[in-house]
Image (cartoon, rainbow, N blue to C red; front, side, top):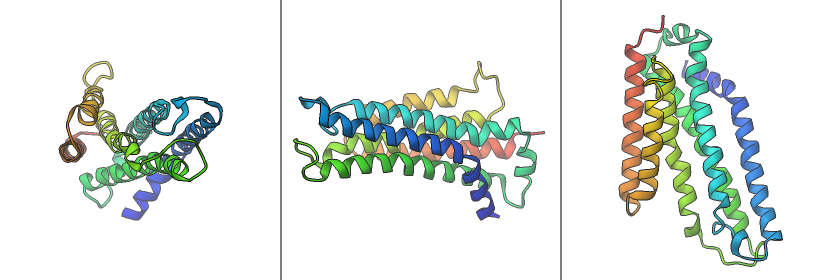
Length: 215
């Protein structure tokens, strides 16, 4: 049953994932090409902020679209009653959704950063120094957007007015993302905060699914 649900989720998000992969590949290609045409430091890998901006923009759109596809689409197709009455607890079904969505999001965004970093670390590809510590913020963005995904998923699961309180979890998660990534000092505190909030949002999503009437 679990394998069937995982396959269902992967099949349904395949289109969105393909679009995101194309966007990540384009971002990689743009940044690699910029090195060959830029005479100054504006094209230096992980010094030029353009890659961070593209990574954040693509990851934000991907996280929201992915979560909404896994939640709101179930409402529109009226498949929640069929899905949530499978011989599995509702909470486990939601956790499977979360697990698949987060795995796809982190894999796609992380692969983009890793590919760009491996290119930057290869001798002879660009006339500038490279240190793996330069990729730190990009990795933070990849993991940090799990908050945006969880907030969007919770917004999609809830029954409320779109222009009322339904989008509140998504808006709050975006604000928390910026606080965790940029305001908190060091590595341990932001990582612990990120993990704690992700778990909290997952618990709330499970509670919503367990108690909400989808009829």
